Image (cartoon, rainbow, N blue to C red; front, side):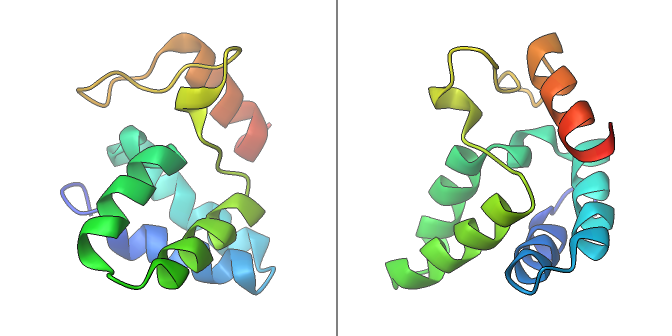
Length: 102
């Protein structure tokens, strides 16, 4: 898992579409521990668009992730995304920790 967050991202998105929030939270927790960058929908979109030619698949994936609370932090003024190394910035981590686990 530490090198590849996509299995957990896929599980979280599917669980989001099915309203299985507890299973989604478990998957997001693993991503949070190992790959913070993928808690930002902008990063997920950019990566998914490399693999899926059908944009409707990408949108369904993102919709499922939105349903479990992920957001595009790079467009928000109040919350910052992790830096390029995936290291958390304090406002970003505060938002994620209270959003999923608070």
